[in-house]
Image (tube, rainbow, N blue to C red):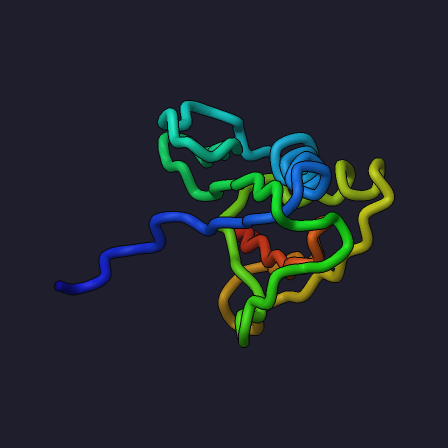
Amino acid sequence: MPITGLAHVNVRASEAMIERVRHFHAGILGLVEGRRPPFRSRGYWLYAGPLDVMHLTIDPSMDDDTPARTGWLDHFAFAATDLKDTMARLDAHGVPYQVEHVPGSGETQLFTRDPAGIAIELNFNTP
């Protein structure tokens, strides 16, 4: 079975951490909270357009200060639009970031970290 694309990323953490991660990705980066099936666990699904790209799962057994081991995962990336507005929102919330321009491609990459310490890359097609 060939892989056809990324379905979603899941973050499992304490309720307090999930709330901070939800605020960052929905409130600052612009994902939209949407329908989540009625699982036994609690959490949120965040959407980019019609796609549920990020699942947030509350794990009551986890404490707020000890992250789960994620192995060798370095970051995940989203395609994005409106670089200027994104930088303004991050600035308004005091979120540090780094901007890189991909040589010869016209693409700009913005790198930051969410409240759980997960590295996030946002890719913008720029003229």
